[in-house]
Length: 419
Picture 1 (cartoon, rainbow, N blue to C red):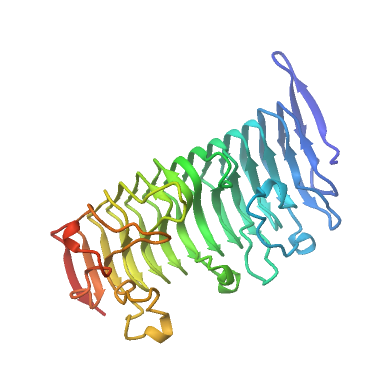
Picture 2: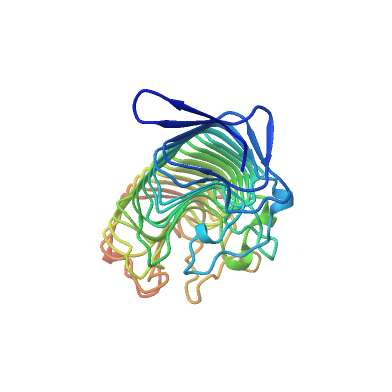
């Protein structure tokens, strides 16, 4: 336990003020932050023998943490661990986090600097009313037994957390995901979140992931070098890096006005996303596909997504992969696609991803038969899109075998060849 200066403010309800000592304080065990406490000042550093779930463990409501730093001593405390079992939340699995808050209400984290964290910089579980603003996270996250990222390093909300936000924060050199939500399939979904005005640089997995959630807005974030360094990418588990990823069952959410460059993977993955919007995003330089729909979660169907005004430039493969119904895909600029020159370079780039579907990775917009399960592209509107790239004059909009383009409304799209 850290020796802290303790003050009480009067009048009104008693509020505890914990001022960290000046300089660097080495900690060997967690400090527990009780209800109604404000913590600020100083610098905490995990000792090489530190043991516990987090350096600071918040276990009361209405806590404010601001203007201090945490050094997690990752070199000494990293444990090469896989992801937790499918029925275990990260709260009960990942150790040596920076801040852990579970089952609390009313948490503010402001202008806190994290570095060298072995687990997550901030892990929030089963909580409500969490505002994280102007934090910085650098050089954090651990590896799995194969030496790849194990999702750790960034900021995580899980297990039905509600009314949360991360704003104006910077994350750099993160092995796992940057900012994300996650819940077990049997757990409540996370609800009413905002990720806005954050920046990401050199992230090994996803810059942002919205997992098993409702009513989450992801807006005006920017990132570069997503999926780097390459040795951190979890290729054994097919964890393709993404600028904005989706998982579980996600609805009534929006991804808007985000910008990513140099993504060693996809721009936006919509696995589980439905009844929402993807608008005004820009991705330049992609090592995979532009925007991809998927339906791994059994409780959802890919439907009613507005994909409008997005710009995809220099994708290795195609622009937008479409399944399901009721989508409006319009006014997008899909430029310099198929940098792999599929299928001329099929052996080098794995262009024949799906057996019997040679057009999947070489088309501007591809109307698919389904993804994790059958869900044919039907009843969608594709209009006023600009599509350029290798052979895009002939492969601008294509359909999987058995899918008739006439099942969808396709009009006024501009298709031009490129290099």
